[in-house]
Image (cartoon, rainbow, N blue to C red; front, side):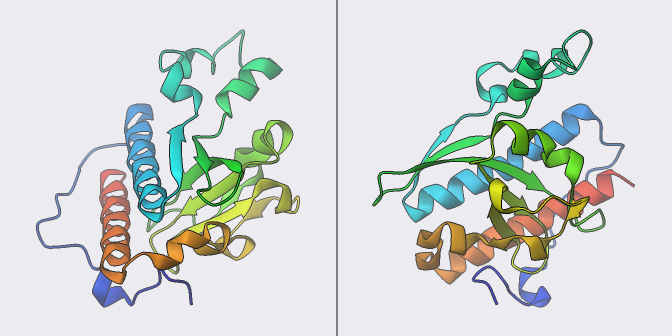
Length: 196
């Protein structure tokens, strides 16, 4: 059992949780991505890691949509820019930095990641770490891209627990970990309700 695993009763969202209605579009998905990225930034920062924005959305926000359109969509340089990992993480006691990409899944949605979603990371950023956030089990998973075998899709079983990759997470107080898990579960449920 990982350090972020709690029974479902403990992680139920609070009654005041607001439900978002409507269909998720590009901007909604982008917004949820930012929420989950901020949770991971907070988590890593609380552990003592130095965390810096790295993804191209941080430096070139206006390029987000443009690079997905012709004539850019098939250019390797555009693919490399679009697949830039979200964060640069420096380990406090080691002379080491990691590039970290964050993916999230919702309660009702798929739990895994399709090969097409990580193909560009394998090609351009094989040394990076992929963090998967899902609203069940250990909630936070991580794996080095280079250690993911080539196959059509990946599930949490293909990943290690977050604290195995980022061991300083072990020292987080249980109340803080529980608060993060509740926040993730609430965000995922809201995302599901918005996507009905």
